[in-house]
Image 1 (cartoon, helix red, strand yellow):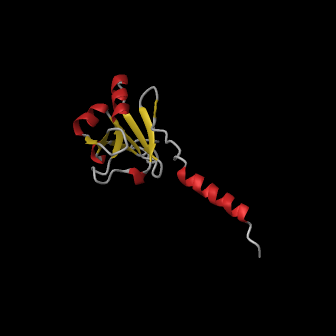
Image 2 (spheres, helix red, strand yellow):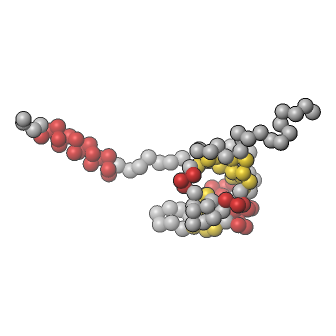
Image 3 (cartoon, rainbow, N blue to C red):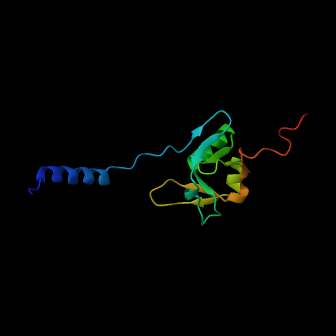
Length: 127
């Protein structure tokens, strides 16, 4: 059976382009009226840094100027994690990864964690 070299060349070129094209840019989060909001994945927890999450120093600086807390939502669990910028500054761990801007990691124990799926103790009771 004859080999279609033009088709094979096209497939190779397409594969090569996919490998060398830059990865899509992730959205780092957004400022809302009451907070800096970002969705995160559990796989991105910084296990060597208190099992917490990191944030770029530039976002922390801007949140501090606006006077709003940082609020993260875990995609897999729906948990809402909230921390004040002051807590990041006091308890955070500065990180410098090659190729990335400076970050600050906040260990999980310093976050206020809410589970929106779990009702409060007095929810549903008559007032």
